[in-house]
Amino acid sequence: MFFNTLCEQTQNEQRYLLSAPAIQQALQGEISIERYRAFLTQAYHHVKHTTPLLMRCGSKLSFRDEWLRKAVIEYINEEYGHERWILNDIKATGGDVKVAQSSEPHTSTQAMVSLVYQAIDNEHPAAFFGMAHVLEGTSVKLATQAAGEIKDALQLPGSAFSYLLSHGDLDQEHVQFFEQLMNQVTDEKAQEVIVRTAKHVYRLYGDMFRALPELAGEPL
Image (cartoon, rainbow, N blue to C red):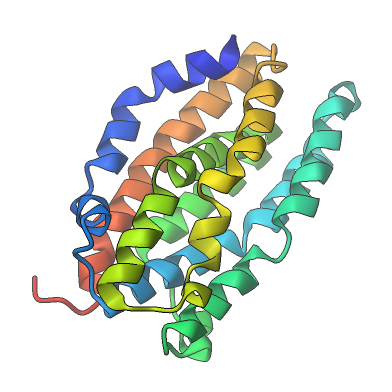
């Protein structure tokens, strides 16, 4: 089944992401408030593109792929407005929402988003699902545990974790939906592009996490 193939063919890239020191440290509660805000700010910069990317994907699918366009609509209904949750989380940490909104995304974050737009436009609309595989799969693996450790370490209220917790253990049903959807993808071109996009996004997302100490203003 294609979902298993996707997981198998992106194992090295997934390891690159998960080995990012910032991820390992967060899972041990080793994190500053500045680093958590830096993470949320970068999350805002890529999550605000989720709905536009889905709309771009849906508009470029052929009429033969109407079943996939229906899934895109479900995704839009599920994902719309999540960037506002992130801004609420930043506010709950005592951060400045306007500063976060007006900031420039890190190079890796911008590259990740731009790459997916390019792949949708020039390779295959299903490229979006390569990005979805990385972000959803990583979140379910790590988000709930990380939120708990960060909350304890920084003594933050639960209202500072709506983004992480919404994409954690409670999102299992969404992941199962994604797995079933990928197993319906039989077009070889689409499969190739999804795998390739996932590999790129794993690397760039890993680079984003590696940039968090610098973004948080920590000594290099």
